[in-house]
Length: 397
Image 1 (cartoon, one colour):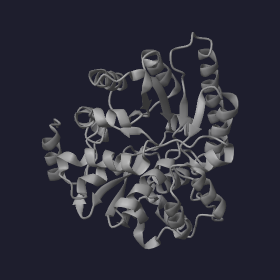
Image 2 (cartoon, rainbow, N blue to C red; image 1 turned 120 degrees about the vertical axis):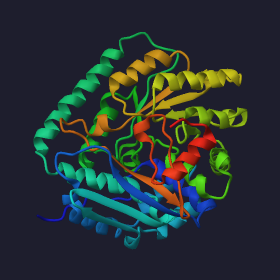
Image 3 (cartoon, rainbow, N blue to C red; image 1 turned 30 degrees about the vertical axis):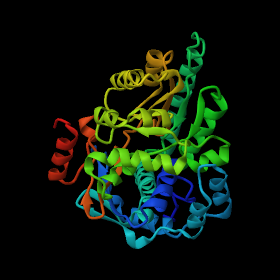
Image 4 (spheres, rainbow, N blue to C red; image 1 turned 45 degrees about the horizontal axis):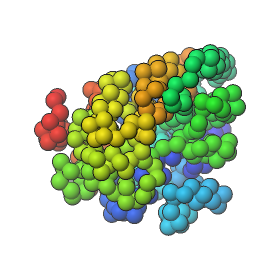
């Protein structure tokens, strides 16, 4: 079978990879990191069988460079700085920094090296593994089912349009690069939603599709950005404040949505004082009970005497259209909202999706960890460090 590349553009990734990459280049270019692939469910076919194909795709990925038209699009985003574009002009992934291998039925992938050279692997690896896995199924049957389900989603939102308006509009985005059925299917989904639901569909995290389809690229920060500060020399108790402060200094008011669940919402709000609450436009929820999380966020703004109507809550944890509409029904008259929907948009084709991640586990030789608001999303490779992190932030095991 002829080789068919999955990644053909280095823009075919999430915007937040670039928006985290830039401050790391400016402020921590010396940091070294380890990212590790994790499978959280049991697929129908063992992923270990894909190791050779994954390596072939990584060979291809590491031969790609940013093209001038791609750099021009990045440069057109006001928060992307000229020196970062110059860095990307000479950048390409180093094959020596990433490896994939099989161990029985299990697939292992690790990226290790200077963080500014390995942090970009994450989304590409996940997209590669997903597409290779789903090539083993009946493509046409899956696409037919996917189109039927996509039409159902559009019908749900057209029915919703008949309901009385709320104080704030309903807006949702595509966050589905990492879990997509395939590259072309994501393009079809995003183009269809942009055409059929322009009042509600407001952008995509996929930088390439945003450029090609004239959409707003969406994204700010992920867990890896905050976790990095657990090992950059600041006191562990202060890592969230340090990460938020450097973000503010980098972006000066742009990209103002802060992620809250690196060590849990309660510990985050303890650090998210009046200074940060005024500087950041809003917050993003990615684990735990979304209603309880939203109520905590609104109570925090109220305690700080900040008008919540001037802020924005973004929900992005395992959403589908009904869940998003239910949350909108609960909060839509109280705060501006946004909904990032991933797997349910780009991989709802009648096949069981893979639950895969590729997470930061070590920086500068020290372990880092995430204490999620959902126990199944807590990620750490060092039990001693995890216990210490829980102790420092008062998070129960």
